[in-house]
Image 1 (cartoon, one colour):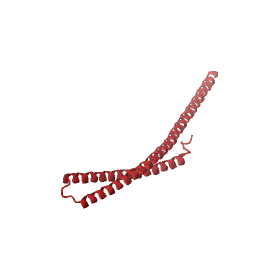
Image 2 (tube, helix red, strand yellow; image 1 turned 135 degrees about the horizontal axis):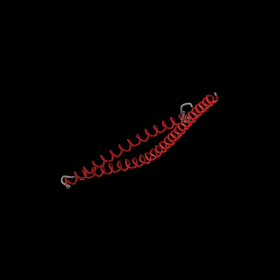
Image 3 (tube, one colour; image 1 turned 90 degrees about the vertical axis):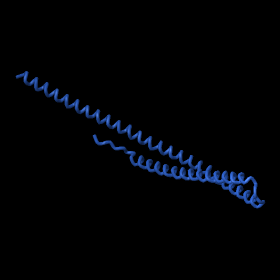
Image 4 (tube, helix red, strand yellow; image 1 turned 30 degrees about the vertical axis):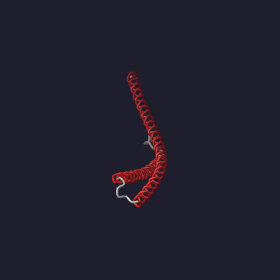
Length: 156
């Protein structure tokens, strides 16, 4: 019997490449998400540090211009934080889409690998069955040949 050949091997290779492409896309989105989280943490820390600095000053030696600048700075920082949070939400949605696509690709590859394993096992079972049948046939022929030889000697 010929060696096992999985006829869907090209499809399996295609699915594996698609899975790898999806894995890379997911990794890129995850990297972007982590970068945004880091930027948000830095901005929030900057905001907290500025508030602490202002509280330490306790209003001493602050002019109206200083307070106005502080207000503008806080507003700009708040707008930046809001835009980063909105961008993070978009990236997280994209990340979820990529994660689901990756799971689907993994499922497709796994199902083809399971099919290949099942077909390989069936092929091996068929080979073993054929080998056993051939061995049984050889044994039966030998047995018949010995019986004929014994009958031939018994007739003499």
